[in-house]
Amino acid sequence: MFAMKAARSLRAGVFAVLAVATSFVSTAKADPEILMRAAHSGAVTSTGQKAFEFLDKELRDKTAGRIGLEIFPASQLGGERELIENIQLGNVDLIFVSSAPLASFSPQFFAFDIPFLFKDRTQAYSVLDGPIGQELLASLDGVGIKGLTYWENGFRQLTNSKKEIRTPDQLSGMKMRTMENEVHIAAWRAEGANPAPLAFNELFTALQQGTFDAQEGPINLFYDMKFNEVQKFISKTNHIYSPWPVLGNPDKLASLSAEDSAIFDQAIKDATAYQRALAKTADDKAEAAMTEVKFTTLTSEELQAFKDRAAPIADLVRKKAGKELVDRLLTETAK
Image (cartoon, rainbow, N blue to C red; front, side, top):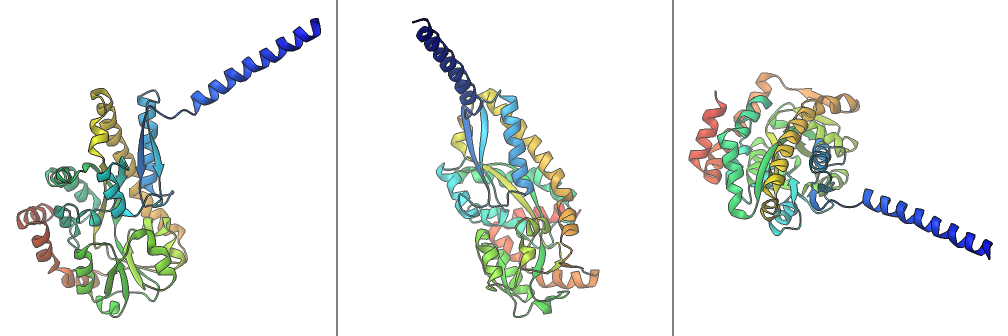
């Protein structure tokens, strides 16, 4: 009898320990009270992904774990256009995307597609964080999107699988992928290429299969997406500075308490500084890693030839984004 009581007591003790352990594990792995779905089309190695991870940690730390992110990278929830639509529908709470596809939702964003607009990133930050950049973010309020800030995608470069390119004439006959943006298409047609739009999440396969000879984008993104496996030539044109607007679902953000909203705003600000710091060195690190790729630095005369071909695009952008906005922007960047 004593043995049976002892056994029952032992089993009860074991069950109690297991119950405590299970409770601890459950608590440790519990989702935050407010879980935000964050998504993007970049690679898991991208500076944007790292910024989302930073934001997640900041929110959890500052709210004792009550707020956090669930991150879906690499187009798991769709390409950039689908992600913007999912923000509107409330299927996603936070995203960052290229500014070019965003112009289909707010035409003012076409203004950032003027070729050779920004001289350097310092000038770009000044405009994006200043009245013009904030005005463009506010323009999204009317289409069910909350514009939060700008992260950095980087200066875009011309890449191809065929040959070194130093002049626009060498683009003749080349099939070139562009973003889903009519200004980008018009610009590369003016340069002499044969451009066509394609969703970013389909691009690697298209380059691999030879559907396109050329594409354009930041060096760090080129490396993160492993485009160096199928493209071996990069011409440093710096033709467009490409920001990553960070966007939120208005209803989700409005549901935060005043205290949580203040914490979120500061965390976004800190994540922006963190991401931009990473972006400043990302291109150099990517270039150093891609020893099999030929990088071409254009002379000032060669670069001017690209600028001259693209000059008329500013008039197209005036029609799309508004003359007053574009003229203000050109005046600001001419300083």
